[in-house]
Length: 130
Image 1: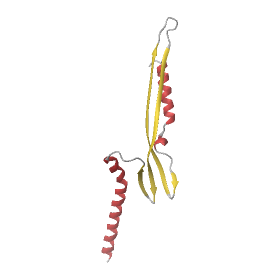
Image 2: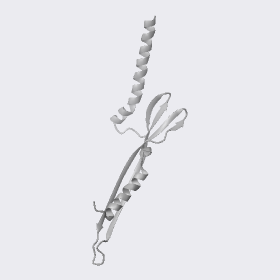
Image 3: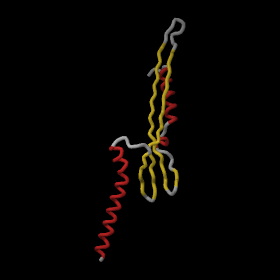
Image 4: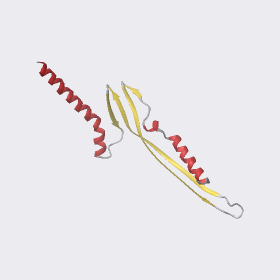
């Protein structure tokens, strides 16, 4: 690929955006609070654009005009809460759909089913021991 001013412009824009956003931006550093570990979860949205044109003239055959830009939006959406050996997700925003609500309820549902199965097994063991 031929190196042109627009290539340099696009590479510079992308490099700057990569520096702003990394994995720790999405899944944050764990923090301790009140006997629980909280891990922030964020949604990252980004976009960029660039463009340019060669403007040949009689004096200079390599005039270039161009520009580029980008934007990043980081929105906190939830916390992963680890407490007493249980993990759950606490969403910050309101649910946008029934599917979001169902997905958010899965960890709690698994915990409740596990507790019911454990309680049933404990009761069965008590009855068979008598």
